[in-house]
Image 1 (cartoon, rainbow, N blue to C red):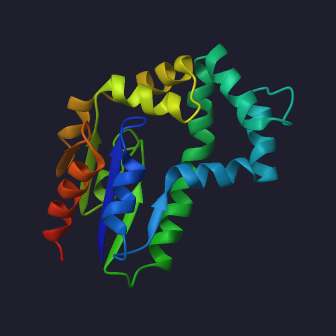
Image 2 (cartoon, rainbow, N blue to C red):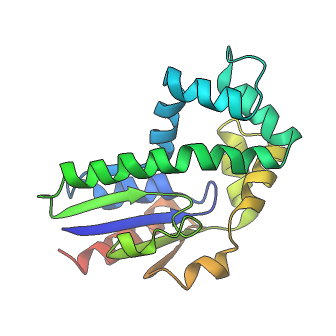
Length: 188
C-alpha cells in the first residue's frame, strides 16, 4: 500500500488536489471531515465545552470560532482534544483499507503534528496568501479567523523541506490537474 499525505495551508486547494489524485485510485481520509463528525458527537462536544468553557452548545461551531478569536489558548486546547481522536480514526482507516493499492490522506496540520513518517509520499499544496484568503472568504470564512488559523500553521518554506512534491496552486484548475496527473503517473 502506498500512503499519500496531502497537506497545505488553509484554503490552498488540498481538497481539490485530493479529489483529483484519488479519483478511482483509492480511499480518502480527510482530517477536516473527521473533525466535523467529532463536533457532532455528544461526548466530544461535552468535553470541548467543558475544557474551553463554552456557555452554550446550541450553535457549537460558531461558539468555538468566537472563543478562538477571543482567547489564543483555545486553539491549542482544541487541538489537544481533537488531534488524538483524529489520529485514532486515521489509524483505524489505515487498518480497514490495508489491502488498497493507494490510500490518500488530507491532513492540514500533517507537518505540525509530526506525522511525516506515516506516509510514503507527502504532497504540499502551496498557494499565495491573497488567493487563499479570497477562497476562504468565498466559502463564508471570516478574515480574523483566517489570520488566526493561518498564523497557527508553519510557514510554507518550513513545510516544503518535509515534502516529496510541492504543487503550486495559483493558476487555473486545468493547470493544477496537469500537475497532479504528473505526480500520480510516477506510481501507476
